[in-house]
Length: 203
Image 1: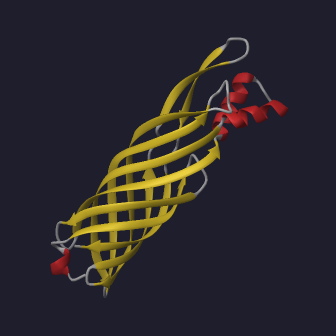
Image 2 (image 1 turned 180 degrees about the vertical axis):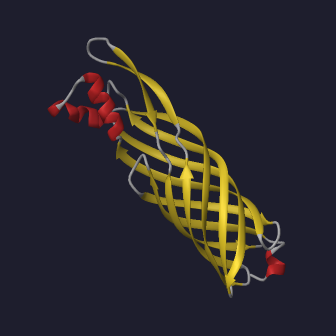
């Protein structure tokens, strides 16, 4: 995109890729970013992404095993109790700097901060066939960089890699068959690497 147009343009981007947070295995992530160019080098914007994963929380299985002293066949019950379905939705404000490295090709670096929203469907401890819902929040930050290429006069294609950091959590109390109680913490390590490709449109 010519620098004279770029310096005045608003933009919208669609991003697709993979995310590898500490809490789960790698999964698919999709997002949208909007913003405005300050000049031909700097821009600011906002973004919202969505990551979904169903998994067994092995850290929680270990906590339940240690609490109940249940091993062998009974550990299967704790695996059922630890089944988790999460929707991670980071909402961020960003600042990006970019510069030409070749004809129609720009490198860029970006930093962002905002809110990590986590929607969690998990199993009830006493009745693990039943689902419960909980939301958790945490401050999130992100840094990254990439390369974009001018496809047309008002469109770019790009690849980027980012590191995302957030650890939403909450505490809860469980009780075993003898009436003994213990307070446990569920911490979701949503820190990890994102690798994405996308298309950016200027208007």
